[in-house]
Image (cartoon, rainbow, N blue to C red):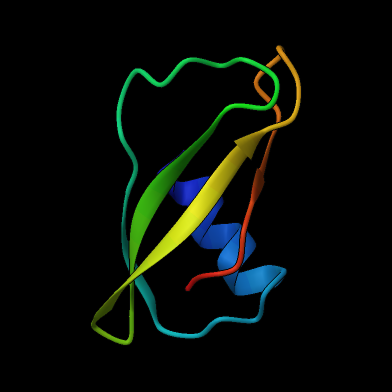
Length: 65
């Protein structure tokens, strides 16, 4: 998931200098559930919200805040 989050931030949100992405392990994959990942952008810690959009593992990545 971390590699996918990095790719979405870089390609969809046009965020440059995306470094380490840390997401919690073993999160439930239930439609509508959310959790946060920590992302290093230019060496500064940011938070992105992950929203599960189905019971088949699909999810959306929010913009870093």
